Amino acid sequence: MEDLAIRAAVAADVPSIVAMLADDPLGAQRESPDDLAPYVTALERLSADPHQHLVVAVREDRVVGTLQLTIIPGLSRRGSTRSIIEGVRIHADERGSGLGTRLIEWAVDTSRREGCQLVQLTSDRTRTDAHRFYERLGFEASHLGFKLHL
Image (cartoon, rainbow, N blue to C red):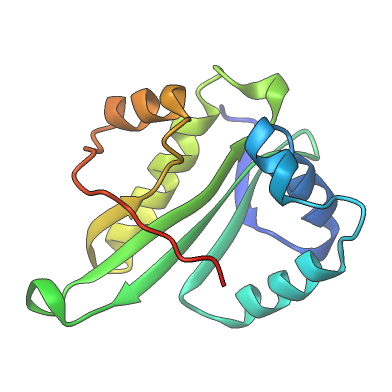
């Protein structure tokens, strides 16, 4: 893994990120690699917010993974700051290589440096392999999540 770099995403990374987001049955229904404009706009908003970290994992000048880490100050839990990990994707060629573990470790370490007392994430209930992966890394399925599409 010495040949791996984790860095902030830039506009040139958007096509690779979107391709990974769309590369599964769920993502294929939600993402639109044919129109990157909304993704570029979103990256600009994310990059302007110091509490947002959209990162890519790069090996040999190729984007092979991504995730978004959001830092959220709060009042609950005695004023604790927490982080949320979203949009974790690993290129199909890299799955099973340890890259996912490396990205999650980066997110947890960054959360600690940012003063977070809790790291949380959600995973679609159909992603049973992902659930096992997160549990292996010490996460526990402690809550039931809800969404309201607007």
